[in-house]
Amino acid sequence: MNKAKYKCSGGQFFAQFLPGLRFKKNKINTSRHSKIRVLQNGRAYYFYKKNSKMKTNFLMKSLNENEFSSLFDLIDDQLAETGAVRMIVDKERGFPCRVSLDNPAIGEEILLLPYQHHKTNSPYQSSGPLFVRKQATTAAMAVNQIPVILMNKPLSLRGYDEKGFMKEAAVTEVDALSDQIDIMFSNPSITYIHIHSAKQGCYNCSVERV
Image 1 (cartoon, one colour):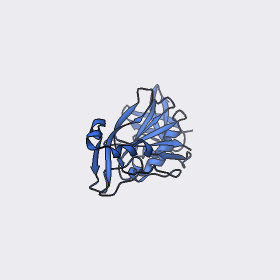
Image 2: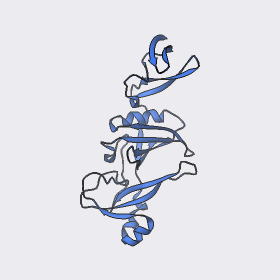
Image 3: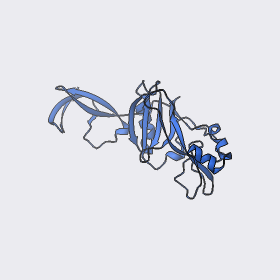
């Protein structure tokens, strides 16, 4: 065991720690580190140990095309009764399809609609707006593949247990997403993860262990 001196909001203190641990006030990428709780004189301090490599394979899952295909046959007044709106894509980004997990092309027809993305008998059931493109095909992602719609934006991860209760949450960028998923799945109580856009809060896709 090593002994080192650190500064924190409570002043200076000594803590015994394993080699490679760093105090949380240091400038580190916490999404690439595992958090470790250390008790010192009755107080809890948090350190981070850098992860050596990814240990958990994952699979990102989209919504199923069969849930939405019939909606495109409705006229606008019928869509309005469900809270949905028909739109035409007018720019390359900003309309991410939650079925294909890709960005539709300019000129494509899409629907903006309310959707219950977390169907669970717990206080954490949740719904929100999302886009679906016409004639979208359910995405077939490869193991550890990250879809296009998650690129170039801050992301919010929410880890749930088998009863639909949130156990952990984190915010990350896409370049650290795989590491953050690995960290979250290191908690054995977490059975699945939902990925949201950090700014708008919209649901993107789910993540499962494989």
